[in-house]
Each structure stands twice: as C-alpha cells, then as structure tokens.
Image (cartoon, rainbow, N blue to C red; front, side):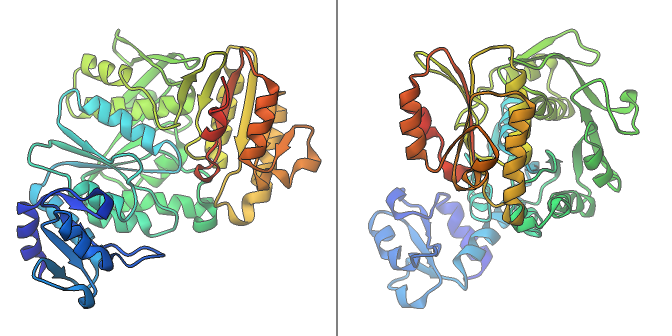
Length: 438
C-alpha cells in the first residue's frame, strides 16, 4: 500500500494507537517494535479490541485485509505524519536546545493559546516516535503547532526537522546535555544548529536570544530572524535598540517580575531565575511576532503553572519543595543551584541526584557540582547516586548510594520549616524522596 492510499484510510480513522492497552474504537494501530517485543504479534489483539486497521511489517501476521503490510512500521508512521503536516500547512514552531525546552514549549503554548487554537507536544513526546504521533493529532481546527524536539546524538534534530517541516524555530541554549552522545560542547552546538540550517534552507524564521552570544554566532547566516533579550544588558555586538523584543526585569526571585520595553504593563510569573526569564522572553517575543496584544501575552505568562516536576513548587504541611527533578545535566543543575542559593529565605536543603549520559565527563562534572555547592555556601546538601558516591572522599557533605538510602535518611531528619531543592536525572526518580517529606 502506498502512502497516499494509507493517508486516505487515516483520514477516515484519524486516531493512531501504538499500545494495545490503550486501543480506541476505529483507530489505526501501528505495530511498532520494541527492544524486547515484536508488536506485529499484537495486531490481531488490537483489531479484536476495536481498531479499524493494524499497520504491520511482518507478513506472518497478515491474517486478514484489516492488516496493512508495509516495509517498516516506524518509517511509515514518520512518513504519514510528514505527509499529514504538509497537507494541512499550518505554521509549525520547532524548539530544540539543551535546557528549558519543555518549559519554553509550555510558555509559548500558553501565550499563543490566548489567540489561536494550538497543538503542542504532549508531555515529553519529543523523539522520533513522539513527534510523528503529535503531528498526527493535527486537525483543520488547529491554527498553530508548537513542537519540542529532543536529540541525544548529532543528526537527530536534522532528521526530526525533515518530519516536522518547521516554518519557525528556536534554540533555547547550548549546554552540557547528553555529552556521551554528542561527544563535546561543540557537538551539542552542531546538533542544535541543525534547526537553524533547516530554516535557512527552507526560508524559515528563527527567534534568537540576543543575550546568548553563542546562539547569535550560530544564527549569523540566517536571513530571517527575530531577536529577543531577557535583560537590558547584552554581551553581543547588537545594540539594545536593534533587538526586537526586550524584557526589563524588576525581580528574578522568588518570582520573576518584569515589563516589556516600551510598555507600562507589569507581568509576574510564578517561575524564578534568570534562566527561566530567558524562556519567558522567548514566549513574549513569539507572542508579539504573531500579533497578540500585551494583555494577551501577560495573561498567557501569568496563568502558566509548571508541573511534572519541572520548576515546580510543592507546598507540604511543614516544608516547601522546589522540585526540578524531571531531568538534569551540568548546565541546568548549575543554573538551578545558583538560583536556589540566591533565594531570599533560610532553611535551605538541597537533594541532588546523579546526572546521566555524561560519558567520560561524568567524574569531573559531578565533582564540579560538589565544588559549586561549596562556592555557594550551601550547608545542607544530600548527594544521591553512584556517580556522586565516587566523590564522597573529597567532601564533608552527605552522600547516599540509592533513593532508598536517601528516603531512610530524610525520614530521620524530621524536616520542619525547610525550603528543599531537588534535582537529578530522570532515571534517579527523586520525586520518590519527596513523597516522605511532610
């Protein structure tokens, strides 16, 4: 079956499922293979549960005409998503970068939703499977698409761009994420610049942070770009008068308060820290570009509340947790720790988990974080994980090997009236520790 024929079927059955536990009536089931299973074997089960068709790539399981045989299910899913996106031709904004992608995506979505019907990446569906699944949710009712793209090796962002075909793009920053896959900071920048290169080739427009000299250099060749800055001081060669959208901060913590240049309207966000102000100004800039009023932009920023363990403030009975435990890398952890240390309150406790996918940089980067805590004069710090345990001999802080050890330790502390910062890589699942804090 060719792509056009499959697309005709998709239009009649525009719900896509990849999990037989979540089959919806009259959906299309795509039998994606996993490392430990062959989903082709679940095709008949999907049909029995109400799927209209099952897309498979193993002829052994083609038991009837409801099974659509293709060369490769994943490739077909990606091609179908690209074809669908091209038919509707709705503006797509792509977001890549080392840190802050999801927060930026949510802020942009919150702002644009004040005027448009926006489809955006749900949760963390930002990879070679999640991205096409998101695009296949696109309908003629949508007016804008905000897509987050995540990569852990060079070439992946370029591949995702070929599926999403973005008209607009933003690189949040270059940081020390996935160094094991990228190999170096230069590799990180090369990966992120793949979005700029796609936009350059396809006459797209980039939104560029003028406070970030690295990003400004990367964007030099782009003929179409809109710049923004999260302060009235920039290290770039651009004067502030030439920057398209500038935020003037009044306060960065415990919450961000600011005005947009040439505006009297004050905006207050529940987020804190200069790194989150960058994310906010990206959303402000994009809102202005697409014609939103200042009141609409203000409302979009102010109603946004972080969730899913990202920059989330969790009020407990006796303590407050500053939960940023969805993921971690040296760049994001340093920014978060500096912000926490500068917060205007006492009773600070930091619980810090291992950072993953650092490869040969792991030992040095974990030691750097211990050194940073000393520099910031953070006294009550608990490090959790095998990588931090390797540095135990070099520090007087508390070091624990597992979450279970940390849970037992925290229970005995009987924490009261503390402000507790938590951050670690996703695999650390530090939120399990938060559950025992009252």
